[in-house]
Image (cartoon, rainbow, N blue to C red; front, side):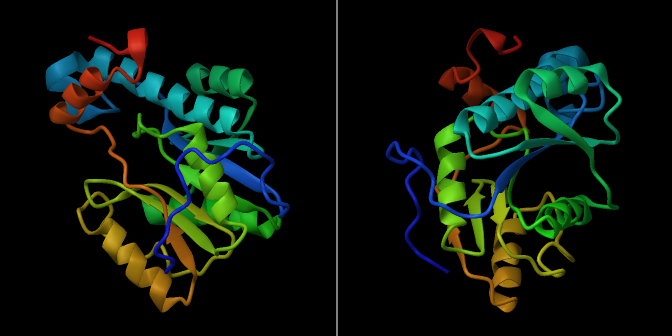
Length: 226
């Protein structure tokens, strides 16, 4: 692994010449009672759904502003919700549907689709309000010299993963949602002989204390449900 990480907000200038880099945003539709359920005691079902919707829009805006390449909105369980269609139109994203029995299979499917088209892919979720367009540009730059790039999360997972090369075992057999996801992924990458680098560690929002941190940081401004 490379120990030094690219800066979160790199100097202005063109990205290195390389094959196409796509950005994939994994997201569910903001249906009350089905998203951000651990925040329902604080925000209620509708408020938690509104927050989720704003986080999806934040992720898509970062992807658009990064100017890296085509944006894909990978939806679950399908792409039929009007919110998803509006987001695709507003942010210029292509709607795709997640396929797989767990998160690992769904991510592997998205990477296989991009790599099969000879494109690198940077994949993010919609849980990280601290994610910026600069970080996405850093990830794209990293893929010009590495097979993989990851931005760890403070809770032991990660908020971003990018691949320019893949291996079937990278995302298999991992206890998704646990504190050991990042470490297990490091072992998978090392075992597969994949050269990777890591960006700065960020935080995501799942629990009431995360929401309090988000409110204090003011990252979503007036869009933050209260």
